[in-house]
Image (cartoon, rainbow, N blue to C red; front, side):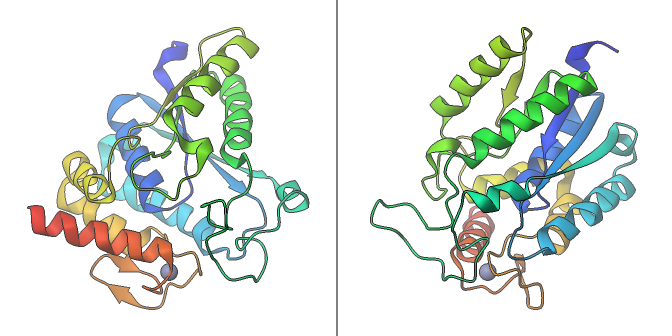
Amino acid sequence: MSLNSSALVLFSGGQDSTACLAWALQRYPRVETIGFDYGQRHRVELDCRQVVRRELAAAFPQWAARLGDDHVLDLGLLGQISDTALTDQRAIEMQANGLPNTFVPGRNLLFLAFAAALAYRRGASVLVGGMCETDYSGYPDCRDNTIKAMQLALSLGLAGPMTIETPLMWLDKAQTWALSESLGGSALTALVIEHTHTCYLGERGQRHAWGHGCGECPACRLRAAGFEAWQRSR
Ligand code: ZN
């Protein structure tokens, strides 16, 4: 198998990275997943990862044949350099600099560096991530120029091509729902609704048309608004 035939997907168990995983499974003959355990306030998203992988494999046999190993890296050390609403019991709010206080500085750069090191060891030369510049919360390490610069740094530092694919970069949330539907039809949309997790507060209990979550936090509101916009546009 050539290097170019394997991809490693940064997979959190959320809606965006599930769309990325489906996108990769349609393109690459071998796809592995990586997740990061960094002491998130809630564990539910990590728990969703295995459910989503299992359900994807069950519903899409052609993808099951391509879906390889899952890797979870312990990045608990991030707790030593962050003081945010994701790892503390603080409320989520916007800071004076316009970034939500859930922001862990440079978090995606760290994730990409660890993912690239693992991909290299696994013989994969493509990373796939859900970074998005369109309607996300203004994280500067998710912007296209940042990712392009990181791709260059990783390729130089590893002395070989390390491509970073970001299929969601220019999509809004409604278009992300549309992408899932185009990749896996209503079966994939149903899977995303039922099994992926987005809520910042880690709530699963309530089941809305767009899935589970508190319905009030910024992540739930973004997901709900995207779903409704997508429904209206169909
Ligand atoms: Zn929520």
